Length: 423
Image (cartoon, rainbow, N blue to C red; front, side):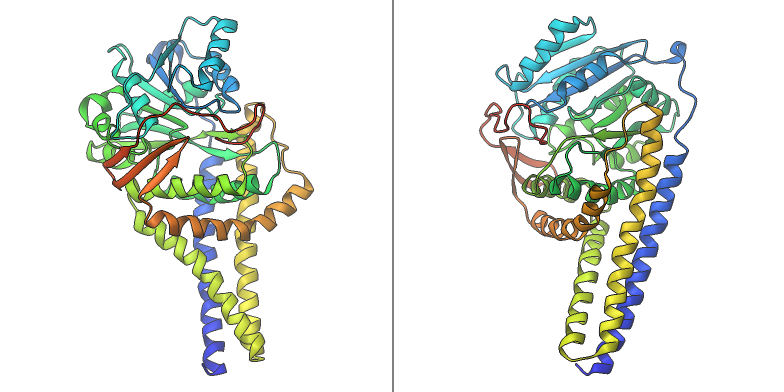
């Protein structure tokens, strides 16, 4: 191409990258404003509906003991905890039993997954089994993941959001503050910071902190859908919309995850996230488009910069370098406001927030290009993924409601005892 044409392309590309940063910044500002308004009066004991908390377990998650103890110390008048362990020989069974023996709670009920469905994930099987075992006295069901540590008002905050008649489900979201600043943990932190903004904008529920009114189970086919699904949370927006209800995001329920992660584990985790988005996200084409734009934009800029170097086109080189700097610095600049807003929420709960050292901040900056590369690879892989492994279980995925579990096997731990690596 003639140098003048390449220079013009570099200028147009610079404008495109600036526009991309501005759009992303606009979305981040909206999310941060929501987080800053996290305080609200909580429901009184007299009005608090009876709740069931469902915890589905497969594997001994690093912070499972903390999760269980958090549930047992809820500041909520009427609630029961229903724990479904995947198998009697599962490592989680011993952990739950130890907590039962030491705390001797009268509101924690342990059951095992009796008949794993072949048409959905094992987590969906456990959740469906637990909900179908509940009596009619419960007015809502809260779900929590084993890597979520509930603060004392966790359940009350969910119940408060469900007071609105137009709300069918209430949800929070995750935020990573890893104890160990490994590259994998920081890459996951950077990716998640962008992901939670999209989840907020699209009103996507998060199964780690999720409450659903029991009338939703009675009046919709959500349990049947979960019996044929890979995950239970992403689809809720569409199910509730058809019922004239909505998903409410509760900003005070930004839940801290302190687990570690390696690059290998992050790749397979984020690929699974993209698979669930492909299957159930209401705006999957927009997710793919965003992934392509945020990947191809910087790649095209690098290509133009290389052309400028090889052909001594200083104009193309200057505009390309400027574009890369604007884009990368813009992405970096969006993270501190989100981190600060989440820290306000977490500090209000008297939880530690000073996890990021000065060297850690430098590593986060260096991790962002790595995050973009690994995410792009995972997204491309998820586009055609038809077989996926999840906690020692293998599934064939032929469509949103065409999930097939291969031969059931109890979970076999591969992690070392005392490890904080995510399962």
